[in-house]
Image 1: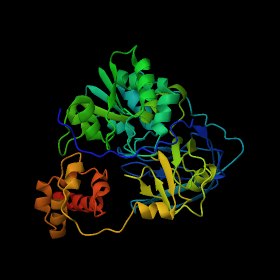
Image 2: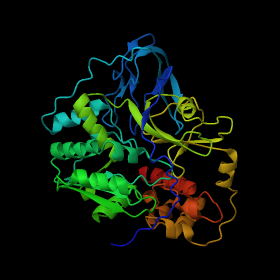
Image 3: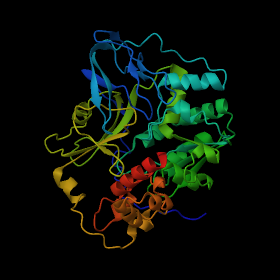
Length: 432
């Protein structure tokens, strides 16, 4: 197979041996009604209502969506508007927690007896992709195309993040059982689990657990970012190429994050919907780097305080990793379903890694680094001309915003950012 581009990063996996631990109960949670790609939910509770853990508090009739549940028991104290990181707004349900943390009576293992009931159960669980894309799982698991392989993403190639690794190390049986459940109900004959080679213990454990299931194969992947990107993962584990405009299902593949698959196993056994999220907390102002199981909707501030963060020195806080993460604008913003990490850095660290951009020197490093063989300099020039025909020929819509181009640029130009603007322009023109 042809070797794809990409880059080698310092991994900074300082929390890999930090066993997950529960976060102390927050005084309140703030749960947005949109934590997924697709239509936002509408609240089905009102101010003053008492709610319990696992109770559904938001839903919609839209197909591309997923219901939302309370992560605590307590009283609904407010329903307000919330501005998300993409600039859009949705409703937000604020819940004051109580001492009881009573579980909703509706939390029962679902009755699954065929594909339709399995997909219905997955929708009711509120599961969305836990690898960052937040794609509603019941939609991903119901492709129109014929699919023959479940591909599980255990690469976790972003620096600092170790929450997926802790899932594989602490509860590997959940990963195997979740994979078997998905394969059973979707009638998939094959599963491959891709893990970067810098996680030998996870590879060893899952290989041992999968030994009794010849239909499951564990593949060791090179430590090259972005190994966990769908197109890259599929190519490096199966040798299949997802072309421009295609979905993984067009190549006979369903891709799921390792933590998502493990959740499927837990949900089918317990009926507890997606109300918690394991989060890695790290950075140069964190006193206690850790992996924490956090109720969805918990303020970021609570998580940082638990990790002994020096809040006065924390000038750059991210949801996710340093390559594709999103800035946290307010430490009172909530932890969402898709958040696998919270990173906090000092001003000195941020300045060191965000120097002032200078003119392009035409070195071509961004071209060599791109895992999809795109041409960022040509894309930038076409975008400056607003030449949508040229952007289409340059296949800008393939860009997955991995950030490799920006990382290697000696001029420190915002190459990935320009690509995204160009991608949006091309997609807008295509719709006309």
